[in-house]
Every structure is written in structure tokens, then in C-alpha cells.
Image 1 (cartoon, rainbow, N blue to C red):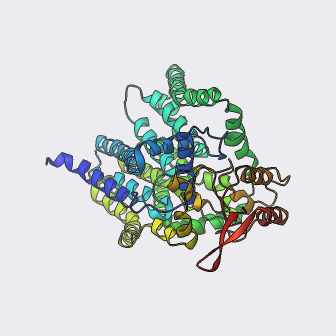
Image 2: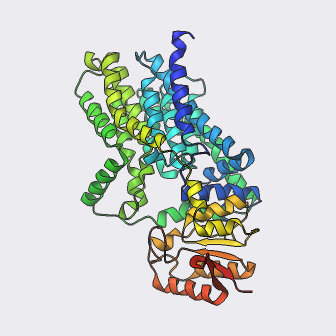
Image 3: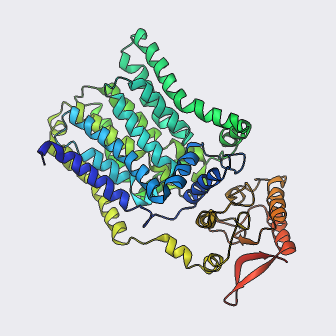
Length: 488
């Protein structure tokens, strides 16, 4: 093989190897991903997002999981891997164009970070895709593609409809691409903005038309837009937020890459550097990588390390700008760049090796649970199984290719907010749906939730009264279980 092709080989092998660690054989079991898979299943059976099942995520993740239904788990994994590889190759081309001596090192760092098991929780998460789109945006922004601004608009819309608050992280790049690169020439700005807008409409218009045609535009607006402005609003005091954020960043093991890149980026502002404007933009993007963690309000009660995934794009992007435009010899030379990047990667590489050495299938662990062993032997059909209070076991719907008896597929807000469903409208809908379908089995985690019990005692009592009135406990191997069966 020619020497100039070796970087492509290094990046491709790294991408496929790290992705294979999260293939269907070894995928990390996660409630969000099971729910996303269910949305694809529901769409394949004629369901419409927001109208036929509740979720407050933007809709692209549902449609992507619908493709997963069409192509199977390995096809879905391949789509995921190809997207990551495409971003990696674009980044490699950019590093080559700016003559980095080791053009493969930053694309490999991107792959190590976006596949780091503690943070990524496997493949298929919304923030994984937005991180890929963010790196693509950065690469195209600095390139000379003929339809560059159309593509930038398209990527921004993809982020908006995949995980809307991640647009905040992308915002410095958007401003730079549309305005800063034109150097104050307003005649250049206007066409770029128009092209950017047209590119975004390529995503926006079909999605809105889909919901309009299916008479669900109101459901989309209510659940995917308004809902997210009404909940996730709890905030810790600012100092406490920073303390919690620092602690969780350390637990995610992204702390060393973040602090090192931030310090180097800020220091470069005071050193000889040919593009301090772009450097400043990358620093803004780096710190805005934490915006989702703040906006979610989950700093209060959940350790959601996957909120740090955008750092997998913003840290390599910042390092690229430092290395590519630095006029300081100790930063512009290949060896110091390689040593610095290796130091950032060292702890993550060790963590990845630990993960690879202990690869197991979480699905096997699920199957060993007595309730799952029992349910596996039952002939289930649509609407005849319901899990309450634990999104992990949406797995049953997906494995048995059945629909949930109610649109309220998951109910974690009962375990997060004491004032959720304070008028009992949702819980009454759930119980009415179960009664209407005479749902055979209910797996009840209302008191034994993996996170916490229902916070509203009145709703908990209402639910328990309903269970005792219509269901009877199922004994498995002579022991009480969390499974309930419809009274004949």
C-alpha cells in the first residue's frame, strides 16, 4: 500500500474496531435505546410519532430507528458506523490539507472519544449523531465544497431535529461560517444565508409535511417543542451546578482531554497564531458543549454522562485549529502535536482496553431475570404486555415485535417530578387503555424502580389500587415477582 494511503487505513480500522465493540453482539443495554427501537417498530406498524406514542425528542431518531427495523440490527449498526467513518474521513482530509504531519491522530482521537463506553453507552444515541454532524459541519466549514453553505444548513437542521439543544454548541460555527468568513463583505453574507436556509429546508419541509399529512402537526408541536420548554426546568444554584459538573466530568474520564485542550486553546490566544478568530470560535464551542447538561435540569438527580459526547467533536476541532495555525515551533511541529494528543488519549485508551477485555452481552443478563424468563415462554401479541416504571424492559416489545397497549410507553417523569400528571389525566389514560385491551401481563416497577419510587403518593396509590382490582400477582418458581396477570 502506498504510504499516503496509510492514514486512511489507520482511521478506517480504528473506526470499525471501536464501532464493533458496540455492535449488536456486545451492545450496551440502555432504556433510551430500547425506547428509540420501539418508536421504529411502532412506525413500521403504521404508528405516527407523538400521535400514537409519546416522546419529547425531535423526530429524526424515530425515523432512523425505523430504518433499523427495515435493515435489521446489523444494518442499523452499519449505518451508524458509516456516519462516524464519513466524519472521520472528512476530518482526515482537513488535517491533510493543512499539512499536519500526523493527519490521522485527531480523527483517531475523535473515534476514541465518541466510542468511549462510559459516555457513549454504545451506539444509537441522539447525541452521538449530533456530535458526528457537528464534526462534519466543522470540516465543511473550512473546506471549499461547491455547495458548502447548502450542506451546512442541512447539517444544522439535522441537529435541530435530532437533539434540538445541541444547536447551541454548533452556533459559534454557524456564525463563523455565515458571517466571519466574509470579512465584513455583506454582499457575500446574503447569498450564504439564503443557501444555508435552503439547505435547512431540505430537512425541515419533509418532516413538517409528514406530520401535516398524518394530521399530527399539533401533536408534534405540543410534545417535541412546547413540552421541552415546560419541563426540565429545575436548576441548582450556579456554584453547585459547576461543582456537580466538575465531578461528573471527572467520572466520565473526559476531564483530562477537556482541561488540557481548554488550557492549550486559551494559551494560544496569547501566543503567535494565524487565526485567533477561529480559535475563539472553537473555544466558545468547547464551553457550549456543556449547554445540554445545564438545560436538561438533570444535574439535580441523574448522572447522564452521554451529555458530554459533544466534546468528542469540539476537543479535536479545537486542537486542529491550535496545531494547524500556530506559529510557535513547539506547537507547529508534528512530534509535540503527537505527544500532546497521545497524552490526552492515554487514559481513554486504557479505559477502552478495560471495556474490550470484559465485553459481555447485557441482553444475556436481562434474559436471566426470572420475569424475563417467564415472559419469554408466553405467546404475546399486540397490547398484551405493559411495563410500568422501567424503560429498560421496553426490550420486551422490541423482542416480541408487539405494540404497547398505551401511547405512554415510558413513564419516568413520575419518578422525577412530584407534580407530574397532578390532575391524574395520564395515569387514568394508561389504566383505561390496559382495561380496554385486557392486557394480560403488567411488569410493575412503580415501587421498585431502578431509580426511585413514584414521587406522588396519591398517583402511586391509584396505580396500586388499579392493579389489585384487575390483576393478580404472578409467582415464579414459588416466589413473588414484579409481574401481574389479568384476572380471568
